[in-house]
Picture (cartoon, chains in turn orange, cyan):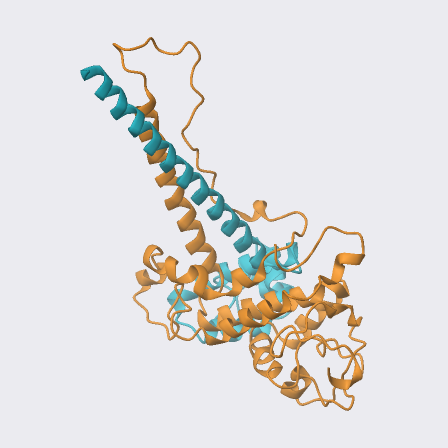
Length: 251
Length: 121
C-alpha cells in the first residue's frame, strides 16, 4: 500500500482488489510512494487525488498505461473514469487496458477479432447442435410396425440459431462478468484460431501481430493482466455493501 | 479542399483537405459515427492509427473502432468485454446443450438396438 492509503492496483501490481472503495482517488498520488504509473509515464506531478493512481501503480502500471494512452489518450480515459462511479472504476480500467492491448496487438480489429471468433464458435456449435437434434429426432421416430405414432406432436427439437449479436444485444444493465476468463487468452483464444478465418487474409497483408487469432505469441501482457485479475478475485467485491446486485468480478 | 466536408472535419470545424484521412470513412451523412469514435479515442489518435496502416485496411479499422466506441459508450464500464462475456455464456450454454443432445442420442441408440434385438427374439 503506497502513500499510506488503500491503493488499489487493478493492473500492474499485486492486485489487492476490492478496494476501489479507497474512494475517489483519494488514495495515494504524489505522496511518499512516488508518482503513480500513469503520471510516471506522462512525466508529470502526481497530485493527491490523481484519478489514475488507484489503478496504475508505479512499478508495472506504466507499461499498462502506455498502451492505454497510446490507444485512448490519457485525457479521454480520465473523462471516461470521471463518469463512472468510483466502485466500478477498477473494472473499467481493466477492460480499457484489455481493449488497448488488444488494439496494439491487432491494429485492424482490436478485440473485435475476439468477438468475431466467439461468434463463429457459437455458429459452429449451434450448427452441430442442430445436426445432432435432427439425428436424435430421426432416432426417436417410432417404428411403423411396432407402435402407432404418438397422438401429440413432439415438441420441435430443432435449435434455431439466434441471429448474430449486434449492437442492439448490448446488455442494458451491467452484469458481473468474469473478467479473468475473458482477458485470459489461454482459455478461449487458442481454440478460436483453428476455426476463425482472419478476414484480413483477403487483403493479403501481413501484420506484426498474430491476429485475430492474435494473441498467439506475444500475449504475455494479457496473461499478466489475467493473472492480476485472478489475484483480485480473492477480494470481497467492492459493491457488496451498497445493496445493488453483486458486482463481483467473478461469477 | 472538398466542397463538402467530411463528418470529421465538420465536427472539428475545420477545412476538409482533399487528402483528408477521415473523409473516405466518415461521410457527411453520418456525423454520429465520428462523434462516437472521437469521444472515446480522440481524432488525433484515430488519425495516427489510420496513417500507420495500409489504405486497404483502414475501412475495417474504422468499423472496428466504431464498434468498440459504441460498446464503450453504451457500457462505460465493460465496453466490448460485455459482449465477449455474453458470447462466452452463450457458448457455454450451447456446449451444455450439445452434451445433453449427445447423451440423448446415446440413450436413443441403445433403446433402438434393444428394440431391434427384442424383435428378433
